[in-house]
Length: 222
Image (cartoon, rainbow, N blue to C red; front, side, top):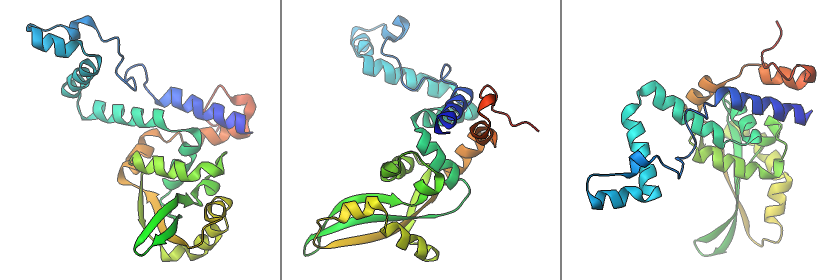
């Protein structure tokens, strides 16, 4: 079942991600026209591949309107998401908050060391394939601006207790003499809401998972 789900997500990437129009990075083989300049000093700067790449990005920024710039941003974010991360984003997009715990070791008076960062129940709730990697998933999704970390959510007290029994959290505190648990929460950001609104495939990917014979079509039969 997981293989069909991965195929569905890959099809969504191909459908929603205009990779050909908006490459994730500027190619090192920059067109020669970009690498020439009327002055020798400017020409020297332009022939440097990194500088040429920056010049190309700046050129695109002046040529893009709001819609094109938004599409390029969303396409870039989409290409950076792992399939498991896409599942987490789809769950956060429902608007619910999920508990997050950091495992910290006290190393002295007023000093501490973070042993585990961003453990959360959101991964298991989303049905990810690699639950041990949920802390990394949450960290990356927050770094992409699709989610926000906030203070402890008192309404999630039961979920925090469940998270404390998670294998990832237990493994992190093993061998620590003075562990401390920092409770936080994670929820979708305003960018995450807009991103999901633009990329939401509807129920198509769920339909493919349940109907493997229809892998060539991501639209549910009505």
